[in-house]
Amino acid sequence: MISPLLEMKEITKSFPGVKALDGVSLDLRTGEIHALVGENGAGKSTLIKILAGVYPHPEYGGEVVLEGSARRFASVRDSEQAGIAVIYQELSLVKDLSVAENIFLGREPRRFGIINWEELYSRAQKLLDDLHLTIDPHSPVRNLGIGQQQLVEIAKALSQNARIVVLDEPTAALTDAEVETLFGILNDLRARGVAMIYISHKLDEVFHISDRITVLRDGKTIDTTPTAETDEPRVIGKMVGRAVDQIFPDAKHDRGEVVFEVRNVTVEDPSVPGKLLVDQVGFTAHKGEVLGIAGLMGSGRSELLMAIFGAHPGRKSAEILVDGKQIQIAKPADAIKHGIGFVTEDRKRYGLILDQTILKNMTLACLRRVSGRFVTNEDAEAAAGERAASDLRIKAPSVFTVAGTLSGGNQQKVVLAKWLLTNPRVLFLDEPTRGIDVGAKQEIYAQINRLAESGLAIVLVSSELPEVLGLSDLVIVLHEGRVTGEFTRSQATPEAVMSCATGHARRAA
Image: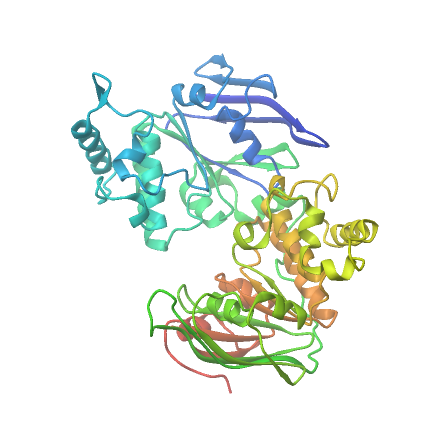
């Protein structure tokens, strides 16, 4: 039996009204990649923050054992000095500093109290070379793509001589090529004996890179299994507590009349005059229908919805009709007035006020409906919020819980509730399940299906092709800002849609 490098035994942690961890146990071996999976709210982030010293002892119960010795980290620095490095999904780099300055921030080599710049850049270059990264250590971080920034975070962790590296959703913003580069680095680190905890909602990646998988559910350890001895359906079943036979609901939509139509939408790149991000695009949205918009990164999908909603900074032109009547939308307030809701791609930046309560976020776009003439009717506001939270099964102690403390899936439900409270005629959904787990995805999918069955017109944008095909009644495909294909549900095969997404124009008969 191999002695674990790290053991977390019977870890418990509570917040007001919530028991986040209830006797969770996890062990990690030298040179192992151990995947930690579970729905949002399962306790993954809380467990990692205990290991990182964010929640110091005695704020939690249980025991952390490192190389056979019990450890109590009083701070993040304590954890780092023990050889533990955590790379969070939200990167912690200082954009205006160079790559080398970021790698050694707070630990710069000094001589007589003065930073030794030559040694700093030399050590950074050696570290980047060891990782086979062709990144200039003198380059400002802001000049790097998000994928390269992620790799700089890994270099920063290894500069601390970390023996344990925790990666939280490390590929969320990476291209396929960058993912392959990352996996090459992780395999090299594993060969050197570095132990890693790998947190991801992307189960295909988990099965590709990990040695063992631990599943958390509702703050408890459900199972730990060697990756080679399980499969995705079994892992998903343990995550959600039930067998998952079909991710997407059976759609029974009755297509009604056209409630929304756009013609000749053109959007200009605000930073490159004359460059069109969307070029003469049009579509119609019917009552009770899900219209999917597919396309690769840069195809103009999000820009199309942002422009229609009055939220894109570039110059734009379009004909917009609601119930057959032409309207003008200059700003989001105009769109809301005409019955358009918009669940945006970046919920934290555009969808929520994170330091406000669930209730305040949910009623933000419909205050006129729940207000008196001069002041908000607080009883009516609370009642509307309680109903919405119940309908969408938002997991929180109350609607007065701060939105920023919720899991990603529950945050997304709050954004959805905000727009449903406006009683929209048409609802735009841009990447509605980005960054949420399979269980929360299923709940969102079921809700989208219910909304369509109730007669709402839905326009769905997603970079996940199975999501578009599984939910949509009709699919249009964009490539470089133009429509290159249009398919009914039965005609929309992955091969046909991807062919159009890569520029091979075709329309369904």
